[in-house]
Length: 174
Image: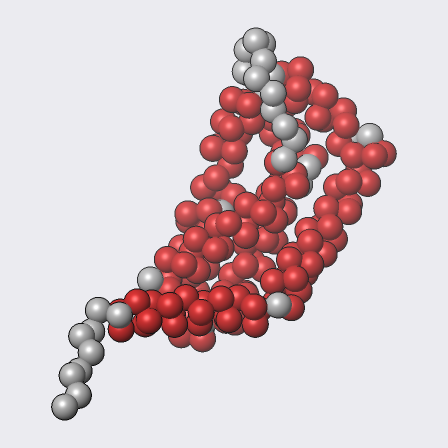
C-alpha cells in the first residue's frame, strides 16, 4: 500500500513539476490537429521538456528514497523501473501525440515563436526556480499547520470510537 501511495505521489509530483511547460491552454478548435511532428519535437526541445522531466524524476526519486529507508537497498531497481515506465524514451512518443491532439500546426508554431522570444526564454529560464519555489511554498504551508490536520484526524477517530461505544449495551448495576 505504501508503494502505491508513493508511486501515485511521484506521478502527481512529476506532473506538477513538468506542468508549467505543458500548461498552455488548448482551446477546442475547428482546425485539424497538428500534423507536423517535427515542429512538435522542435517545441519540446525549445521548452526543455526532456530536461525538466528528467530532473523532476531524479528529484522525486531522491525524496522517495530518503523518506522510505526500506527502498534504499533497491534504489537501482526503482530507478530502472521508473525510467522504463515514465522516462523520456517511454513517454516521448505519447507526449508528441498529446501535443498533436491538443494543438494545431499554427498553435505549435505560435508556441515556438513565443518560447524563442525574449519573454519565452525568460519564462523557460525562470521555470525551474518557479517550480522549486512553488514546491517549497506548498511544503511549508502544508507542514506549518500539520498539527491541525493531526487534530482533525484524531477528532474523527474519537467520533468513530464514540459511535461504536453507543452500540455497546450499558451494564446494569444492582
